[in-house]
Image: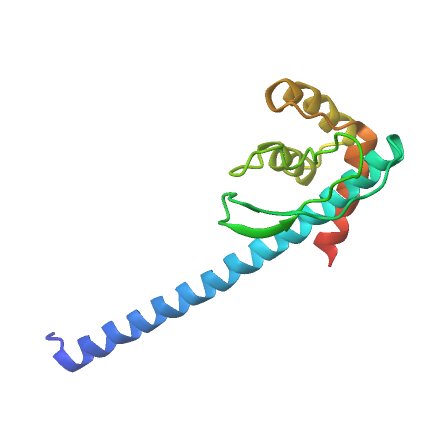
Length: 153
């Protein structure tokens, strides 16, 4: 059977349009993931600051912004909570690190896989040596509540 040139061209055009639509939809999904990640990180850091303020009474001191380059692509104007006096830096966003969120990804992956907060805390102690940050079982419990609420929303 011989294919007619018009039909072949029409099929190519249809395939090209379908590919363009797929790319547009993928871009929309990627943008939504970035927005969700930014919102989740900001909520997570807000809760970390609340826990720090309970342990070291001082005052909250606004939200300087910074950019971050995780695997999902650039996140701009991430609001990072700070305190008036003290040495608070969100553990989920390592100080002066711009390109990765290894510890938070590990904790969220363990939680998503059904790990208990105690088990995650034990692993967090191990990761403390690598990343310089530690989450207690109580901290992980509070932080995973923030994650659960964000996921439900």
